[in-house]
Amino acid sequence: MAGGQVEIVSLTKRFGDVVAVDGIDLHIPSGEFFSIVGPSGCGKTTTLRMVAGFEEPNSGRIVLDGVDMQHTPPYRRNVNTVFQAYMIFPHLTVFDNVAFGLRRRHVAKGEIRQRVGEILEMVQLGHLAARKPSQLSGGQQQRVALARALVLNPAVLLLDEPLGALDAKLRKQLQLELKSLQQQVGITFIYVTHDQEEALTMSDRIAVMSDGHVEQVAPPREIYDEPATRFVADFLGVSNLLHAVAEGPDGAGVRLRLGEEFRLLARAGDVALRGAVTCLLRPERVELDAYEQEGPNRLPGIVERVVFLGHSVQVLVRLAVGEPVAALIPNTGEAIPYGQGSAVQVHLPADALRVLGPSAQPRATDSGAGTGAASPGGAADGAQPEAKSRATAAASTGAAGDTTIGEEK
Ligand SMILES: Nc1ncnc2c1ncn2[C@@H]1O[C@H](COP(=O)(O)OP(=O)(O)OP(=O)(O)O)[C@@H](O)[C@H]1O
Ligand SMILES: [Mg+2]
Image (cartoon, rainbow, N blue to C red; front, side, top):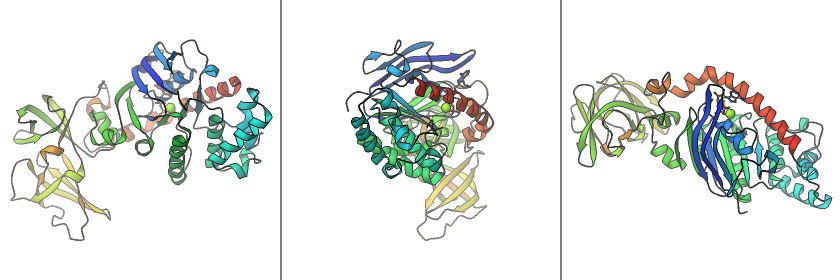
């Protein structure tokens, strides 16, 4: 299906003093599976609600297939939304729930039968068409919600944590189903999730948001391998983040100082930066050598812990400069020669050392400076506020759902 191109230009939304969305730009081509990830409260739902038309921007534009949506009410936008709470009618059968929107649009009976039948087959609910929602599992109810949205042939489908209420196994299964369904129907998906792994698995491109800003937009592999900022690296659960001072150029790279005496060369990332920087290094790229084996890009350290993971062994080393580094060594069947307490040389290859820029908008208060190396920062820090704003979000999406249902034609 053609269409479904979404342009978001300098979009801003304020709630009193809170800037929920702070001038974001996103260009989403037709048929893309586009995900928005970020910690609780960063503005994901607010962004979706503005695209759907449930929330009016303070400034900026939303352009759907070349048409500015400023004066287009939600029910006239060729957009449909699936929320975490399923928003299906308990008193209607599966068939009638899915047919609901078509009946409101006065579609002919025969066509309704055909379209609902097709969609129910697509989401594997054909055999349950006569059931009521209370007779369905959570995953089946979520499929009904999906079918309800898809049957109206929107150009864009907005999904706000649609799998959030499901258990891990069902969630994994539905991720794959959703992805193949999206490819089948060719509709643009804008998919909001907390779960970075989910986004990495399903998306064509991902936007990482923080505090109303977009930190980076890129395909999954690029987001993972080449995070543009420390925030993105941290959010994706990268374990090795080192503090260093970028001193000056060195060939195609940059010379870094760690602590007072240690020097490293980095060739990846933003090698033009100077001053205090953060360096990223994947555990699978860290090499361990015998302590006597000094050389370039090697730092002395002490093994603190060796963890057997099956396919690999994780060795946690405390560098002489005080920072921790994790190395992941493939399990080849041979014993690791470095036990707890061994002194080692930690080799950090220059081409794998990535210099990261600061966040788009460093936070004045908590995590800006404080998303410590190797700390699972976001998740732990966010635990408290998350629960709170989650309740708010649930309440507000509830209202939105009612609007959808009430306004469908
Ligand atoms: N109706 C509202 N009134 C006041 N503040 C709001 C309203 N809706 C959202 N906010 C605030 O705007 C910010 C962004 O909220 P939003 O719901 O977009 O976050 P989110 O990224 O979807 O978070 P979550 O992952 O918890 O769903 C938060 O600080 C939230 O408290
Ligand atoms: Mg939300």
